[in-house]
Length: 212
Image (cartoon, rainbow, N blue to C red; front, top):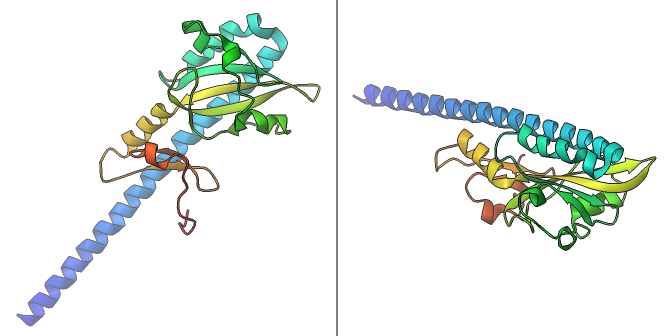
């Protein structure tokens, strides 16, 4: 019987090892799918922000209004909470949110936000800011900003406000089980989104010793 139990233990160990390997493989495949989905979304947002920014500089508020409203509908429903344009001092001069609800835009400037200040300090590329609760909508958003430059001078900033709820839903669709979690991180380890504990994760970072 001794040989039988040894063989049984070996078979069990092999099955456990195989299950662990398959689990790791599924995790890698899902993580890859998440990376592709996220990359595609942000590439589209990058293109939209550049195109809309050029449109604004050429056509101004009235000439760009229809394009801005169309852009919000070009993405899956609920992706964008709004599109805002601020002048070079951070005062809001247009918002798609204001098209749906009358708002006094002068109350909602963005001069104190990092996604505006970074362009004031010279950043000329797309910037992804930390999630925050939008002043106009009251919902959590991820600001995607780009400077409006004319002859090298900052004329303003365009901000695409991505709904954090939309990102969270996408994470949950890939990891529906309550025991599994997925998160998007900034390069320095700060959380951008979390599939199950966003309220606890936002503003925090993963431990520095994590391999990723």
